[in-house]
Amino acid sequence: MAKISPSAVCQQMLCVESPAPPCVFIVFGASGDLTKRKLIPALANLFKRGLLDNGFLFLGCGRKKLSNEDLRKIAAEATKDFLAESEKFLSSFFYVSGDYDDKNLYNEIQNTLVELDKKYGKNFGRIFYLALPPAMYPDVVENLGQAGLNKNEESFARLVVEKPFGKDLASATELNDCISKWFSEKQLYRIDHYLGKETVQNIMMFRFANSIFEPIWNRNYIDHIQITIAESIGIESRGSYYDKSGALRDMFVNHMLSMLSLVAMEPPPSFDAEHIRDEKIKLLRSIRPFSLDPCNEDIVRGQYAQGIADGKNIPAYRQEADVDKNSKTETYIATRLFVDNWRWQSVPFYLRTGKRLAQRVTEIAVIFKKVPHLMFASAGIEDLPANVLVLKIQPKEGINLSFEAKRPGAKMCIGTLEMDFNYTEVFGAELPDAYQRLLLDCTTGDQTLFTRIDDVKLAWGLIDNVLKNWQQNDAEPYFYPAGGESFSQADALIQKDGRNWRKISET
Ligand SMILES: NC(=O)c1ccc[n+]([C@@H]2O[C@H](COP(=O)([O-])OP(=O)(O)OC[C@H]3O[C@@H](n4cnc5c(N)ncnc54)[C@H](OP(=O)(O)O)[C@@H]3O)[C@@H](O)[C@H]2O)c1
Image (cartoon, rainbow, N blue to C red; front, side, top):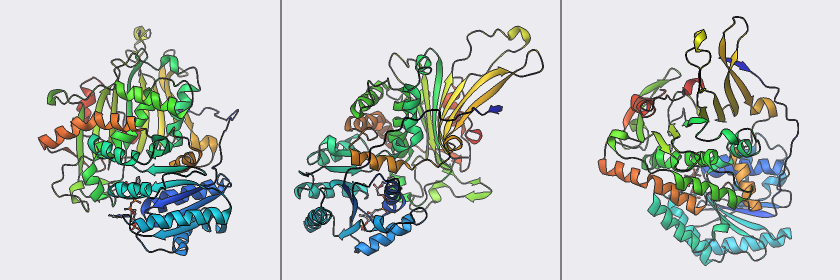
């Protein structure tokens, strides 16, 4: 397939970025992996971009007995590759240690925050971040509330909760009841880091800042939509978490449904957080419940078996550390779903995600209907491929449109061309990590990219029956070889509708 490169030079840029007000991140579990790999580097980048110039502090908390200096060393290590002049940044890091269920820890946090306000002569807004195993959330929130840390008369107090938010509808509701006793929905930032990705946010810009796509963005022109999150990696060191979770909980209920909402929702009246979140909710409400009929499955689950990737032998999922040797946890799911509303009636959405697949690819592919009449049939051309628009989320972020065009030479010679826009080629720099966007939005109070509670409940409600069904049937998942492209049962899910998955290894 020939590729053409558009002269995609940014003609005019309209950029709006509000810097953070004075704020302190109070991070529980500050010695952990998320803090080191994501939070500190994201804050360092915001600092470098001048977006924390109004005043920024980091107060780490946890059971480990660390000093301010110890935490600063962790932060220095986490940022050494890109933050040369780090003295000012590192001097903003402080640490208090204690048990999460000990009231003294929260008194100490309160005293430290008051001291820091005095020392710097500012009323810092407080952002409490739960970078902890989820089992610890209720204890911490209850203690924050009892210590009065959920309020901040001088500025703001917010709470950031990492995924997973519960493990089913009942536990998500219970967790929310526990949190909402102390923090209002306006104070609450539930992270779905996929929404922080530039290319995911671009779905909205692409759809609603251009007039040419919306008129054809419906059942009249679109045949179907495929959403893929394929990972080449396995579960790494997360065996004990993943084996209790699986792909449906880990990827589908949050990231995949978020992408689906953005691509399928109605245009919101404005870029206001509540307007956007209202439209996402309406879309989720329109999703038809999955058929659990074994003769007409809407969900297929798989688990990787031993295989070969890049010439290396890859062990089966059941052989991974901290995984039950008879585990039935799914590392792959493929689903077909329908959105029962005017726009999408009868348009199937095929979603798949899996670990240990042939390649790492995240994309949304919009496959348009074929031309209604083939006027070239008399010249021997009996079929033409459909136009496909691909929103590439990772790793080669961009947008790709395939279309048919005449090739030079013979009178009748048609071939597929691709118009390809690549973020890195056009904008040069690497895209900022999702956490930069999300952390900055927490400071400015923009909840657009965070999941509202009705969204969480609808998403869990959608898969609750599926989870129960799997548990009751206690059936084995299908097995696929690590490093593979797909497997026959996942293929059958789409092939029974006369369609095929896009090839992961060719995207
Ligand atoms: N890591 C990621 O890339 C990532 C991505 C998405 C979401 N998340 C979510 O972010 C949260 C934190 O993830 P993480 O990877 O940073 O977790 P982690 O490294 O396993 O734990 C973070 C910290 O939690 C504290 N902790 C308290 N009770 C613990 C217990 N029973 N077992 C282990 N640690 C305990 C520890 O600090 P102290 O010993 O000092 O108390 C630990 O350093 C989780 O909810 C996770 O699901 C993480």
